[in-house]
Amino acid sequence: MIIAAGLSPAWQQILSFDSLRWGEVNRAGEAHWCASGKVLNVGIALAHLRAEALTIAPLGGPARQPIANEFARLGGSGRWIEVDSPTRVCTTLIESAGGRTTELVENAARLSPAELARFEAAYLSAVDAAEAVVLTGSMPLGTPVDLFRRLLDETRAAAILDIRGPELAAALDCRPFLVKPNREELGHTVGHSLDSDAALRRAMLELNERGAQWVVVSQGKDAVWASSSGKCYRLEPPLVRVVNAIGSGYFLAAGIALQIARRCEPLAAIRYGLAAASLNATVLLPGRVDPGEVESLAESVTIEAA
Image (cartoon, rainbow, N blue to C red; front, side):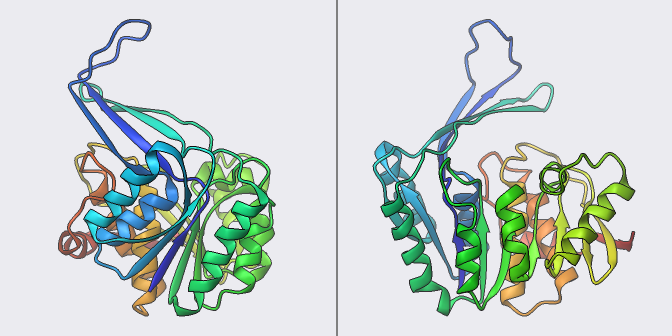
């Protein structure tokens, strides 16, 4: 089993336009609603990859039941922590003419100490059965920065962290199996911008030295970088027609977790995750992909020493 756990789920509205005219009335050609936010996207990705998985997240307000219903339709399993504050609503604006995507993001609401305790208890009650875990997403205001670190102290499974900044720094001495920031998040974690490949390599190796066994850095449609044991690698994604790249980074984490749970070699697991992320970008709603196509596409991902 794989656990996906996080504190900042979202209920996502996706609006599609030919083009946007800022400051004017714009009428969407298509409108969709779906579960989103890092933790739910990882859970949805795992469901579509047909993994045995459990998603643990706080849900509240009008979005709680639609999110639970969506997971049920997908055959995904969720342990939802009921909270007083409504789950946030985020909006994605897609312009088909220019291929541009704009995100309107609401921050996750503060959780009470009792709600955080229920989340932590739900995770600890399930983690002994896990073969891999993905801890992911931003921390709501007021969350103790060492919360994920405390969870890792009780985790024996391979841990994949899709987090950044102080909460990532606090968890590194637990020697997580893999950390997966994007380039901007990695810069935020080490405290400076990464304006060259040399700076990127140094920052990745710094996280290895501080405890991360593997570091994987995504950067949108460009190459994914990986490092471990003093070595760096570049993985080139396959060429695909991008429809909506939202959620692709989370699909990368889910694909890696699935393959690691299957005892796959790390670079091969990262290759699979990158193929899954690339395929996700070809569909409108995050995570709606065929695992057979992922296997096929993974063969076109190239790996080279960097």
